Length: 417
Image (cartoon, rainbow, N blue to C red; front, side):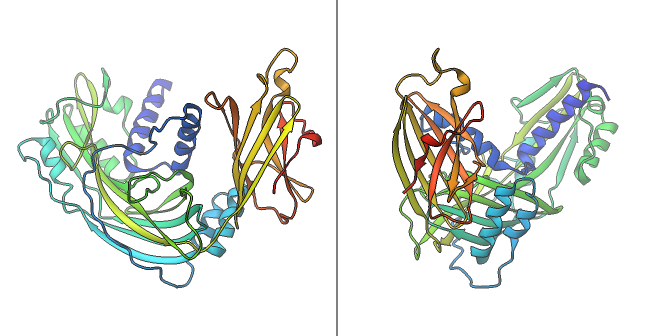
């Protein structure tokens, strides 16, 4: 296989994954976007800002007190290469309550026309059935950890000869490329059917239905909750199972509850091939929208709490302000470092620049497992976003700077109180 062909196949797979939610770590996208936003200090949304295709308000009811499903423990085993994440999920597993409420979803009818291929593909997505279960959850008032199971009826394919009607434009195109040279694949039942179709037809189109649970969650007022961590696995051809860790605004306390909204999303993707090349497009089941969305509210109890840890300190050449939270599963927060002048100057070489902070817990150093560092021009300061595995003892806590050359001077500890 040529490098060019391999590259095109990778592009093709990436395109499909964007529709079919095959990315195992959607939190990574949130982390990258959060770093970019932190630098800009603007209110740009990370989540999809599309027209809401459908809104179905389905209350899940109260929390069922039942046997723990141990899904968090399971997900900790798949992150054995990330010890801090594995430890955190093991702790969450001991604290989570069983929600175990299931919502059955039926997609609404297509309200557009029926004259074109686009219309018929869009209409085929009406009456689809999804099942969403929030299995377990733990909320400490600052973060929510929840596991879910999302299952659906079988995705179906539609196909036809010639150019598909009803498409004013295609979202992606590869002029001069042939299917069997550039994008042929055999991933699953529909992938094999698609290969067979384009092998038998030099000109034609093939469309596939897709559905997935949207990234993370929001509040009922539309406020997106930042994703800190996530994982998703395919259990079988029609079932996904995963977890999310999302951050809440301030103000939730133990004994209360919080309502979050999950999004079941669905659409179709189409490939068209002729003698001029390969063309791709998405087909929304809702007119004038990018994707169909069904909003599902979930009520989560607040059963834990966090302890705020704060400190301010002055050192030669800079000041530091730390605001962290001690939870039952980790320690996380932010350190704002404001230099008197640029940290990297002629008399302060780049290797002397502070790259991050380690946690000193009763004399034991704990490395930062997050490692986000962003320059904020608005504040004239560096923001260090840190996260540490929960240490064995938290009686005495301090933050120690880690310089670019690896040194950690004891005289610049930020003592947390």
